[in-house]
Length: 505
RNA sequence: GGCGCGUUGGUCAAGGGGUUAAGACGCCUCCCUUUCACGGAGGAAUCACGGGUUCGAAUCCCGUACGUGCUACCA
Image (cartoon, rainbow, N blue to C red; front, side, top):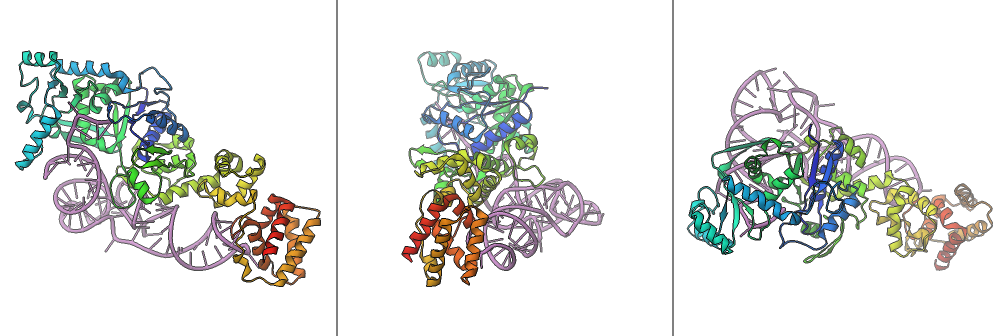
């Protein structure tokens, strides 16, 4: 059986969004499940859309997500180069081979001429022009020109493209792993450009040639490619590679949460959620934050993405990458698009934060805390604190609000307690402060016991003074157990906060 | 317009001829907790519509509607 080789083939044109990462993820999972290879190929044949730094950014995103490729421009491999711009001459060779076998031809019509013709037809109320079987004999190309004229134009340096010559009346059939058998007629497919005037291939030629040369066994891509799949199947046929054509799978789109349509980077801005894996500087929209910057764990991000269009049928939703590799199957991928739900995405993150312990969380939480300029204790203590507060952190950035009072004096919202304040409570806290300053043990149970017994002695319900103590230590009505907090911040700091609050009441 | 793909609760979804049509998110109620969370128990769907096939259809077939994608020398 053929070795499994799959590829993720993005264009380096900007930020890597959800759909792209999910395609990469499914490729990664499939490759690892089958013990195959996961290739990253950079599709940079459109020089006008090339964006500096985008390639490295894509690699960084895959690294952060934990799904690095086995082969890529930077990882190397046996089937390089992995940038299409560096394979330019290869495509020309096959384009010319297609001309020789009569499956392609030179075309000299400029984009302007074609556009003008389209305009004219539109004005006449006719259907828009398809450069294909019906119209190719009306155009300026090596089918309508003599060999001599064609040669002359080429030697004079006239700009030209190479187009496939699609035979009409053929029914193209192939099996799509997620959709089953697909059948389309070549009547509606036009003579796509294979090689552009600048000598670069279009997607259609490049994807077929590269997938074949790189011995790709399964070709996964977005659903938007389905209509042009017949062109690709035809090219495999014309190139004589039909028997080793990869198996196709067209993945469903990720839709915007409101209304319908493909999720775009602007939807994220509009609705207030990330669409990119990591932050990206967009020339028009400015710096756009990614899932990483907004406080997502890569484990949660991947888990959420995997479930957006796939499930194992058991109802289980929380999977680690390794578990996904164990159970992933392309057949169970949904055939219809799914609306992105940011609330659910956050739920995944929350679940992962709860699931991981302080030590595992530390590398992700530490940078967030450090960014705040907090005076942090040693890592062991931070881990303890993480364990104390993690269940109330949905995003990693929530650790700031949920734990900064451990590291510095909070801004105390005295109004939360001042309304029901009286002399008796002042007396209680003064006495408590005195007792705690000379108390032998400084541990959770002893603190709680002495606190409650004092309350009892003074005929106060513990609840009447427990909340005030919380506000004094934390600043507000939130956080883990009060005595846990007192234990962590220590005797001196605890007394200092109590006394400071007392002086303001 | 043409062609393709799709359609189970607000969202993600299981289920593929006979089920009280799972589960999750979100929402609401209650319990736990004298904070906030966590946790626990509940509440809310005639499977887009219309025709078939069948003893029986969310499940199979056809049509319609709606949505969406493509229709570039962009991917």
